[in-house]
Image (cartoon, rainbow, N blue to C red; front, side, top):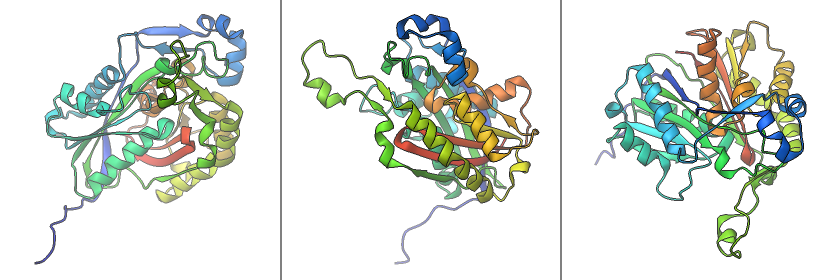
Length: 334
């Protein structure tokens, strides 16, 4: 007996298509300030956010994922039936089982693809992208659809001054395919689990189930200053390590696409990294808010729409947030 067969590894993986979905409803700061006793100026100063998108009540995480996934497949010229794997990064799918990915795959027509959801919230897309790339490099897949989707409004308390104005809804997706060169670099990832309570829920579902009728529905709870200080103290080193792991220098980058958590965090990271002016910085948060797993692919799509996207250039993607988890990776822009 010679042992089990092994998949045939390939030389590289790359992103070949990008797609996004933003709900139609635009919600401005003025629409939210009365409930949190705040002002448009206060929100802009602290986050940079001017508006965000809210999904319709009947619009689901999976609905948004299907639209973003369909757009990415069309952009890549890939038929869903040819997918080997479909990953959905989300923190807001409302069912414990089955995963959102199964229904999304069915609706897209990816009937022969392996599917599963990826957690890690704000870092979820970067984790899913890495999982897709690794599956391809190991020879387990040739074509993978990666979707980041979150309907944050299902879990927001719009009277909470710490979270109500930060988050929005949306989905972004990329197609990842086998390549004859490296188009997705090594990922630098990890966690600071000692801060797991910095972004969490007011209470868990089991506790909620046993509470009296009328108990407030579980909603997002965030220690904003803890997250802010952690991101500023830790993420510069992670970003630098990801660029080094890719065999590049910061000056080789065309774009920096961090998780769209807070404009002040993005600006501080840019200063800490001493990025040259030639590096375009994604600031999709201004008009889209924080869409959690959707922020990075949506920001990539926005760069392309704005005309600041450099085809074939290198972009540093940096996810960070709830967990607290992080992941940095350099990709070649399709």
